Amino acid sequence: MSKKVYVGLSGGVDSSVTAALLKEQGLDVTGVYMKNWSKDMPGFACPWKDDYQDAKRVAVQLGIEFKMYDFETEYRHKVVDYMVKEYQAGRTPNPDIMCNQEVKFKLFLETALEDGADLIATGHYARIEKKDGQSRLKVAKNAEKDQSYFLYRVSEEALAKSLMPIGEFATKDEVRAVAKRFGLVTASKKDSQGICFVGKVGIKEFLLAELGPQMPGDILDEHGKIIGEHDGAIYYTIGQRHGLNVGGGLPYYVCAKDIKKNEVYVTTDLQNKNLWQKKLQLTDLHWINDAPEKNKTYKARNRYRAPLVECRVNNDQVELKDETRAITPGQSTVIYDGDYVLGGGVVC
Image (cartoon, helix red, strand yellow):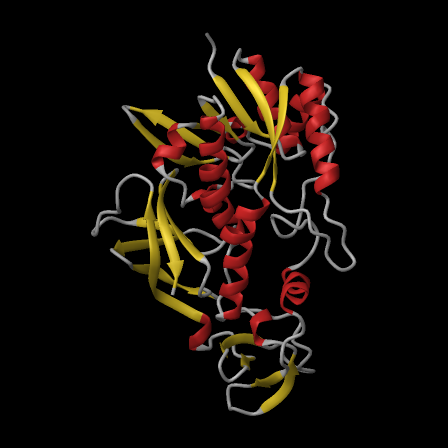
């Protein structure tokens, strides 16, 4: 009897191809649309209905069972509220990481297993190596699309029950070619952009809709001189250049902010010490298999698509070989050992 796999069908091409390939391999596939968010934002309609219909069409095309899991309440609590609180505290969180940890590889996994599934599958660009009783997370063959950074908080137990076939493709064109071979309606659908759960809405627009207008405050240069006014310190992140509406000469970069004083500090000096760090302290550590060895050299990624930097790890301390620009509190530093993801933590 073939194993029963529940595939998270998002309505995009990657998850559609995931379902098609697993069915072709002889697995008993069920498609599941996770309804995580349905609220419209000012000027933007939430695309969930269109995505749901696309996911349903793919299931019909493939001749597989289709379900919808409504996770809106849990998603609001675990992902959205978390994100909003982090911004209010002056940090810059990554909601996609929390979504993977709490929803896709916890809530979805648990619900699917209770519903009779043996495994779950997603359209992530990453690979899972199952060998000698251990499940390890690896980078995708497509380095440009690799999503392993967002998956570092997934547990080994969850990886053991998961499949990610898209991670084996070297290019997006190959994925689309497979979708066309199966005649899937999503073959030419554009990739979604923006926040993971609200489509094209930007962070600023989302926070404005959630929290309302923020108290304006001063923008100060490195000499303490007021050079402008911001529309809410929570909107600004370390290293930010655009959207400051100050200058006229050299560009300014956000180098610090004080939420209590409601002040944002900027500099024109790209060598400003507040913009560069070599030693990091992490909190909320998560190691997928084993913790890193103290005297071994690894590589760290300090934000999605940032270059890898050689490092040493000692418990919650990470020492980078090279000073790195714009490392931001609230973002995650993820540790790699070659192609393997060890885990990481949140920058203090």
